[in-house]
Length: 145
Image (tube, rainbow, N blue to C red; front, side):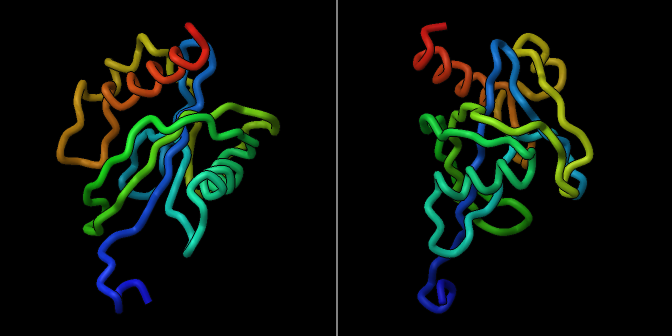
């Protein structure tokens, strides 16, 4: 239906979970095999916040509350146009476990992100230190840290 009407892209959601000065990232099993925050594409007519809660649960086994938007971006992933809404989230329950989509989970300390990620967004699907810093700034605004 969407393609019949000329809609050109999918909508995705990403959740930044910050604990103290650490951020949870997952290593994707399939290309692009990158470290990224939990998230994914919305289902047809799915509310973005509810979709992120669903995606987070499916990928991590964690229950979350969606707190605030961090960023909205538009670009190409896998040859398709994607609009992504990135949110700061808070854990409300559950135990960390990985879905089959991911091979590893890791809490990255804020100070070590520059060793593993480029400073600014580039042409690839790779996340950057700049992306994570936006999430830390929103976290500081909400929690005064």
